[in-house]
Image 1 (tube, helix red, strand yellow):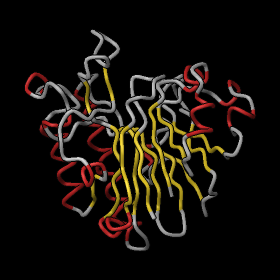
Image 2 (image 1 turned 45 degrees about the horizontal axis):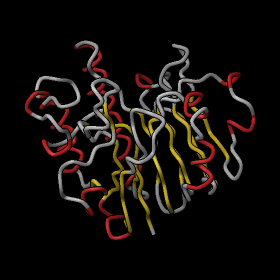
Image 3 (image 1 turned 60 degrees about the vertical axis):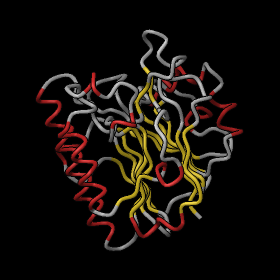
Image 4 (image 1 turned 180 degrees about the vertical axis):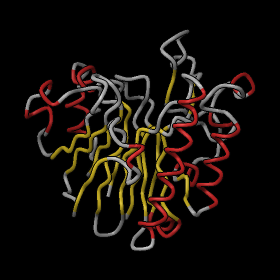
Length: 253
């Protein structure tokens, strides 16, 4: 299965930048979107379910034009649900969970912790709630999770590591959670194929950061250890424009 994840930073915005053309040519069985920022009535049927795909959409229930996730699928899942099991982390439209015969697939837009300490604590709690749920589900079948994790894991995952040591997204406590996640037996699929620095998935719109490749790698696909040998490829595609993020992908055989 070929799965692509993309924080589109506004679904209606990327529709104006040939998103549907990209979708038709990307070859994905599942496309997972984050930060869709749309309400149900703002999309046509063809935009919700583009040609060849069936969409499931998790809208932000409180704040309009905020957050939101969606999965566009060629291969229908056995089941789908929205949000994490912990009710404290429902309502912002951050999770679509698909169950397939061979694994559970999570599309997650993890919270950003830069606003204030309360929001950072919410992010860390969200991380822990997800790991707890993943570990419970993993007793039955493996886990695949992709999306915007909103944290660069190591110094090679952002251009200016030293300057951002006190910035949420590269705080020691955030990076330590990814260490913990990996210690529980989850594999950063991109690093199976590429060990070098300089590969990023997000760039600020300011200071021509993308043209200069001054970025952060905060979009990931992880698989539980049981699937390691089935990961055929994992990649980042910085050539695709339309958002401040670019698509990332994984292929599982």
